[in-house]
Image 1: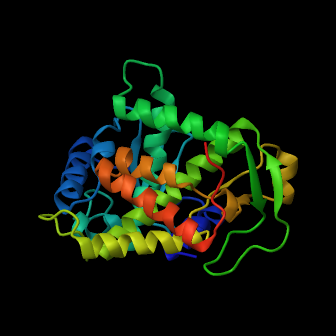
Image 2: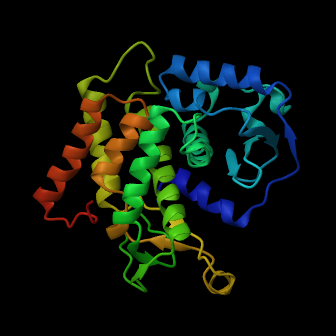
Length: 295
């Protein structure tokens, strides 16, 4: 299992320490998004996330770089992401380790996705957000309604062979499973693009060597079942028995979902997004792998 995903799973066992608001949220958010763009990281969806919706806080979190709490719309950053661990100003983005940036983007995706759902159908919704929300509703119906589940997460190279079961999810369960699956992919994509490009040369787009490295990493993660999410059961009674259900590899993210997120959320070109989807689909054909259910 990718290390950044292990860190995210630890969230289940961890509660936030006492959090304090970022003293200058507007200024610090503007600085964070500007530095992300200069480094070559996705920044468009960050600029579309209004601070009237999400509250920025620092806290001495345990084991993770950031957490998003939908109740209260709180985006909590580890003190290590601030200058001198003081909880006032963000560290320079270029000095944040790749694993922490992956976790950060995973959680920032959840904040943005929460906002998109909140703003859906209102004048505040942007075309980008409207497309993401509409496609999420479509994938919810055709891919996250009837799924295969496991009570434990997958590990790289280890197939889940016990207690796999097919299940029809409640709407909220399916939405949460989609939300987490997409967040897992966003974090994975950030980390692996950082690694494939040797920490993102901001002056250059993809060169073929870096792109091929990224696509091979994607193929490996996809075929290994690493790009799957989880959800908490809808009923308290079931949560006492199984706090989380994990999607089986057969219900992992699909090639069209990957293409959508690369283009709409991660600022990749339509051509690159289509190439990534085609790369996965051609790999499935060569290996005789059964792809996740398609819409």
